[in-house]
Length: 138
Image (cartoon, rainbow, N blue to C red):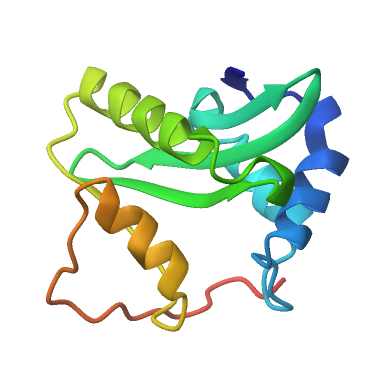
């Protein structure tokens, strides 16, 4: 298993993985999300390969106050092999190196399996409500 920064040649495989993992939504154009990430901290867009095939992703960011992880995905064929854990550990390491005091992430409340995964890594629910407003329609 190798974790590295995203390369433009990864785009199709990344989008296919996100589709397989159920992360895509009609209001988020994955190509635009990738383009946008590549303008800010592109080195924090992580992919994981095993056997020469892309099998995991994590889009990490730090705004000077808090770190975030988006698009954590692991290919179904690789689940249960600690790839998601390894991606989160790398994300945490990169954020700590930048002086980030806290990592936050969002999980759909209906996604019990993913909530259990993050809880197994020591993450706990914060007593907050996430609000959003679309500034640029995709």
